[in-house]
Image (cartoon, rainbow, N blue to C red):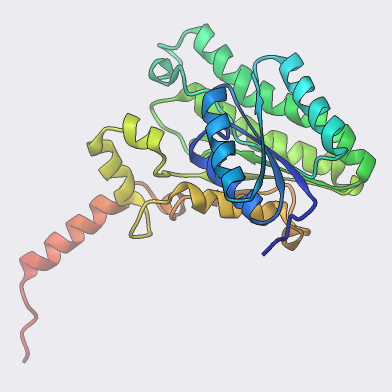
Length: 277
């Protein structure tokens, strides 16, 4: 299925996890994919792996907190290819996650750092790519948000607020540029089994979050990548301004469902077998 043949895609935060999975899926489906991240050595290795498979991939360093870096990236891709068909704004700043607790304890430096990358960086990528998409009257932008931007939690207040802002930014771009042939959507992951999540989420918290899923498994990066690829494709030509939740159903029910199920099971066990009359 080469639905992206002759198309050019940029994926930010493509050194691992969701970004790398998305870049791989887009390349497998025919796109020339520009992989960007601050960790240049990881992007270089990812591109080597894709090129070894006969896929089209190019590495580019990118600092989303620096507008000149973003402008340089977009200009370089246009100079080489003359077009940008897909932009997947996936990168986020997780470097200060341990200091992103609640509003009372958070420092302004943490808040500003997270917003400078997650919101300002996403906006600037769109700002610099939109004129080229408008010129061609065609383009798909997909932003990575988060279930934390939909539901309240007692941790990661800045990250959650930034991802809620990304969803509103998504709607704003869809409204302002839809008539120019540009679609903008967001993908909203829940718990995803990335290496970073496995490394940073304590086993007990992992079990609690996994138990709230309606599916019998935790999603993997490819689950998000396939959704992004669909939203970027012509098959999704009538979808814009939407935030598509991909979370195994965790946000589809009231909190504590897993505990309620356990109580119900215990209650049925206490009642014993049903006796015939």
